[in-house]
Image (cartoon, one colour):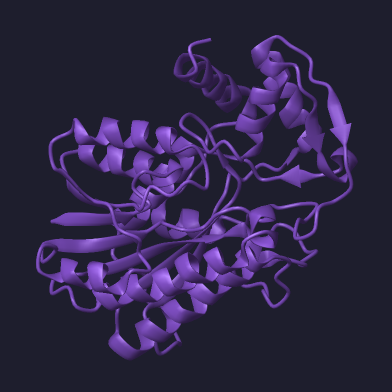
Length: 327
């Protein structure tokens, strides 16, 4: 039994690969190591994985269908695909929209095409996003809510993934489960995310950008809780969607505890022992004022129970940041 993870050098992908390897499972990693953010961080995550038994790696772009489909011969032992590779970031989609269609849409189709060719595949799991809720005003966000008002191309591309997964599940009876992640943070996180960006600026004596004048709330989710959720999905049989014609489901994976942005910043300040200088800014195009996850179904079906509040998670991130950056 092997598990194929795309985005294996990414934040969530590397953490998931490490957790699986540590419990003795074989992992096939795919990543193109692009330069959306510091490639050295991706290489450092990858170097950790390469020291572990059972890890094999391919540097491919998941949108490169010829290279990906060639893996059908070497991946005959793969029982699960976890498609985490994506062009991330809401704001970057305003600058480079094409990257989102290539990676998030074409890449999704290519991985599904690989999946349906693998003889032992039991479950196709993929990353969606809380961004798909877009203009929804009812909180907490439920997977039963309509998601017809995406506010960014990133959100639209992730919603497209959900629809494409439904199509493949219907056509090929391939069990597909989409996971809507909510604002992930923690050690080895992405430099474009709030925790990393704020910490970097505070230590450098630079102002931190605070959008919507700080009137934001997020369901911040610590990386260990995210990984426990994904492992739960891997370890359980794919859920069958009752009353539908396709073995396909969607779940929220969030922290189950919405925090004010200013409280999140305060937790970072406290962990650093330094005060930030704030640069208050208006709401950015594509952004939303609040996210909040209804995780009842995820808990019911997979035993998912996030436990890490920001008062615990932020100091762990800061400790890692200081160690990684040597101070």
